[in-house]
Length: 354
Ligand code: ADP
Ligand code: MG
Image (cartoon, rainbow, N blue to C red; front, side, top):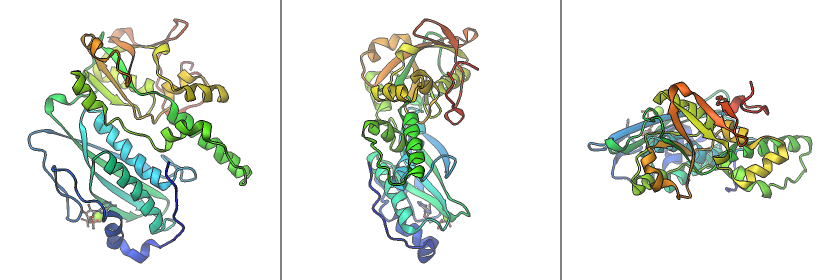
């Protein structure tokens, strides 16, 4: 992961607003042919011809969405781009441009914002996204970052939350629960550090989990993969709040029910072992932990052969008639109602008791 190497401290007032904007954005030259004019005028100018344009926006607030005690600013910048790009990929589209707006209190020197922007720049370069504008202002407390992402797709390729049909297969990319357990590890270490600032944490066993929390990767690869496989999902959503609440979103928007099979939920071995260490049920974490930024989608049964052997994709259930409801089928073959519980209201109870 990234190292924070900044010891200098230049007050924001030394550069002034325009100097700061120039300073932070000087490397952001447009790479894409759809960017006609990027940073530097009253507005950006984009050209998408006759395709559909996809727009999504997110606001991240210090103390609510991130804690700088364990979130380095470079990671925060990277993650802020991922959170937004993920929403574009969840429409089965290509992310193309972002605007970045920040409000920072004078607690943040220029060097801190440089760190933030180095993470934004790295993400934008790796994901082939142009940064085409934003806004910069001061805040009386803490840091706010708002990113608006744009994307593009052929109109027949766009996938909504609303197209799932009974008997469609329910599919998820990657594995679940690691970002939430990474956060648990970081919070535990923060408490240890408060009690004993000289303690040297051994975080090696938790590298994957911490990386999933601090440096998530959005699934840029999935829309082109689906195209290559010749599969168009009937519905799709990204997993920001936990599997159960996203399944419920798809079901409500598509007016269908779902059966999710516990034994099919993809878990990394690191999640299983840390759940044992914390004495938490790993299924609960996959269902209710958030911030995985994987994609959840449905496909017709006819597409089964095309996706069944793909290592990026796990078939975890199927859709049903709406009146059948939404259920988790446990390993013991019990049928429990799926309950939405976002990550910020998580506790250690089983996700299905209430
Ligand atoms: P305006 O007065 O129209 O708000 P600004 O002076 O704020 O214009 O912005 C000048 C240019 O810099 C615009 O292209 C704007 O989109 C861009 N910009 C401003 N703040 C940021 C930022 N934090 N990150 C990226 N681009 C920015
Ligand atoms: Mg402005």
